[in-house]
Amino acid sequence: MSSLKDAEERHEHVDPDAAAAGLAAGRRIFLATVHGDVQPPGATGTAYRLFPGTGDAPRTLTRVTAGDLLADLA
Image (cartoon, rainbow, N blue to C red; front, top):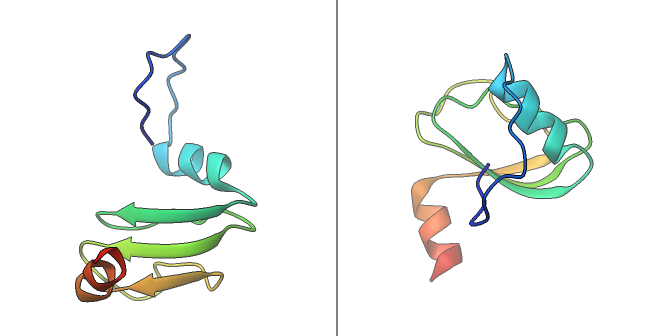
């Protein structure tokens, strides 16, 4: 999660994956992760994981490889 604006306030979150999932819940998203354990409930969109593994993307997200991602951006 990132923004170009300064934060009005900061909240320390014990579990960053849970925080990301909460913000993405029910939205269309592009999810890019290193290890990919974020499971946003009700989210749709695309998931890219740097180090692929089994069972790492929710079924509601379309999983892409680096080549797929580059092709989509071209």
